[in-house]
Length: 201
Ligand SMILES: C[S@@+](CC[C@H](N)C(=O)[O-])C[C@H]1O[C@@H](n2cnc3c(N)ncnc32)[C@H](O)[C@@H]1O
Image (cartoon, rainbow, N blue to C red; front, side, top):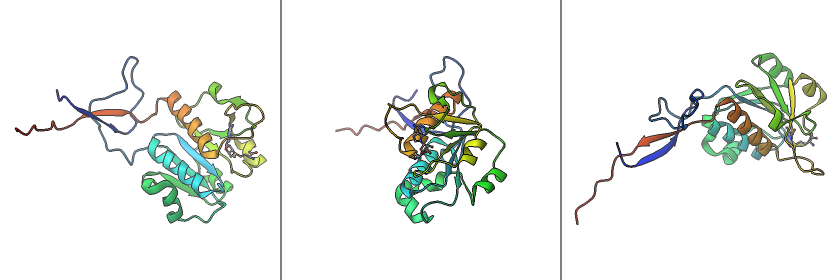
């Protein structure tokens, strides 16, 4: 048994049996191009930096993204790369030209809207593995028709008197909870590292 180990990120594996410590002995696949079933939908985002942050979140956690346009900024790979660095290459991203196009093309899974006007609090909401978690625009949330189309409207509880969280932080909090509940966090994998050779003095 090698004496030193290094921890790397690997693809999500199916939920582990009770009592398993969450570590598996060797990665079966490489990291970047595998995605679990959870999706994050961005409704007409206004701010490129927030969008880049959410694309990076999705890349790192293995979540696919639906971008519902028009965006409030000119879509520029260069701009997004500045915010999301090279993570853009690792995101499974579907762009939709409108809300109607998204509605037409999306998979028939649940749409879970994150909204400050939600009727169920995040800690009480039961996610499914293939939910699409949607966030609204920084400036205006989502219009009524989107509220009406949502299968669930979830609020992240906050202290009274404060308006809202940054959209990317709201996405991260909810997605983390959704992955936890559905056992879809990428697994930490322990991998043997070549033992260093000691050089004689
Ligand atoms: C800055 S907020 C939008 C605030 C907007 N003025 C409104 O009335 O909806 C941008 C998005 O972040 C998400 N968000 C922010 N805080 C939230 C919270 N406490 N609970 C759920 N979603 C939240 C929602 O998806 C929201 O549409």
